[in-house]
Length: 58
Image (cartoon, rainbow, N blue to C red; front, side):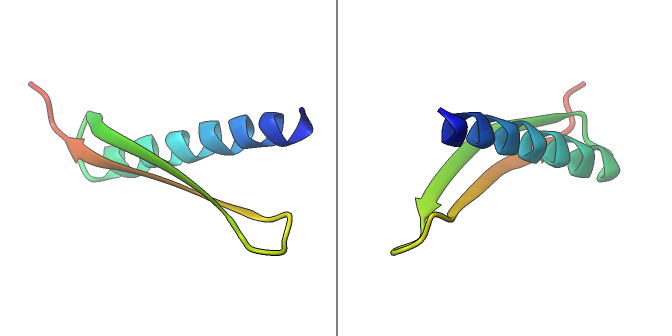
């Protein structure tokens, strides 16, 4: 349960950072989001990657 709550928090934070970075580029939308979660072997650590394409929609 705690792991899922932490994942949701990381996901929200990552998406917010993606939006902020897109805005700095002068765009107003992010499309084609891809979320990857990879656990490290023999560890309780996970890597969460969120990718997207910044676009300007008129």
